[in-house]
Image (cartoon, rainbow over all chains, first blue to last red; front, side, top):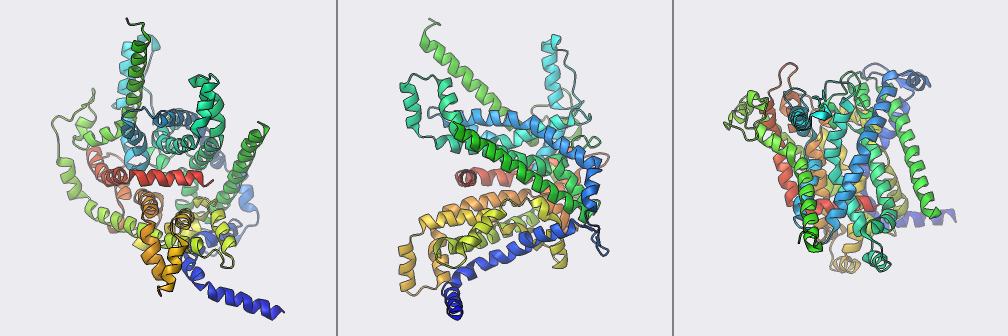
Length: 307
Length: 281
């Protein structure tokens, strides 16, 4: 009996050999650059290794080191603050523009869409350097504009802002850059969400005498919740693992005031060459982020069902 | 007269468009700054009040860029790496996507596909060090392959191609080709690939942008000046003491323009790709 099942199994494999043949190039690379790294990274989490000498088993040593790693905690804190600074304005702006672009009567639609969307196709290096010019404290055009407003409205007591030189402003500067870069991306996702809402719903609401604001509140918002959740999830991951933006604009500085997790991990790995410890940190944070995501999705779903 | 509802509506519309356009220009402003700074001297870049239109217009930045850096080589490197990465990704993902779309009866089909979907949850940060070590062991550090191969096994790419092919490549056509004596690979290459051009274009443009802009990985795996890509060369132009901003902006312009053109050309496909990525969840 067993033999028969086995030969059936073999016949099936041979019959569908093309399936296995066609997916094998992908799976070979996938195994080498995704599957194996995930496992090897877990192995390294329990080792002390600089990449050159023989690795040394340290047990849970890396995990306890994390508890006393001030810069790690500081970078996680910065990640949270940067996220709180940019996610709300970005989401609101993206939602407003998605709403506007969704209106049939809008003129110059292609222009507005391209203007908001171009930032997320441009190389971050270039743009971060342009922003460092704009943010420059004495000769920057942003402070020039602020001073211009200050002259017109003297009672505001506006002063030039040390955007990149001060520990208290560096996170805000990063947040502005990120809003500029990612609003268009979120806008497109929200636009897709809006276009998925059947027009009959709006028509029904209009028959019931709902004004524009009411229609947004009671038709659009509830139906957009999954889209908002998705954008939120992308932003969470984006903030934790952000690299280019911060690396070029501030390189985490001044001090470590704008160092986020992504940059810290890069430095641990490829400046300090602490391969074991870096793997441990990467793993722990990835697992934590995974559970935060899961919890977030569950809360949105529960609210959905409560309705 | 001005209180008539029609006038008020027009006024509101006017304000609406002015605000909208102002925000759009705010978003375009850094591009404008990049463009004009490329045609200014260092002193012109830092004058207060700022020169909104460079006066005089300077072309020297481009000359110096050509003389002092290996920008042409970097441009070539970027083209080879991005081109290679896009082509390899499209081939691998469409071939596997075709297999997942058209052989649903194969053993392990569902499990393997779910496995790929689950792998999309793995953040790149976790695989960073082992992927790097893998390239070291394969002696691929400081080669084009180090940039081309790792990102090409894209789980999203497979998902994306499978979705498109399973609904757009008719089974009847595949069977008819089989009866006509086409090999399985010929069916994929001659029938499925041409039909899937729109999906390939969307995946290709997304991969192109990611690959062209890739800074972190380039930093890790490229070592000698003749191998560096445009973003790295631009980054390294920033000096410790004095940064030649005019030259940087000229180089930045040349790094950005190809992408902007590619985006404007393939805007529709790109948007379709992102939208699909959002709907999959």
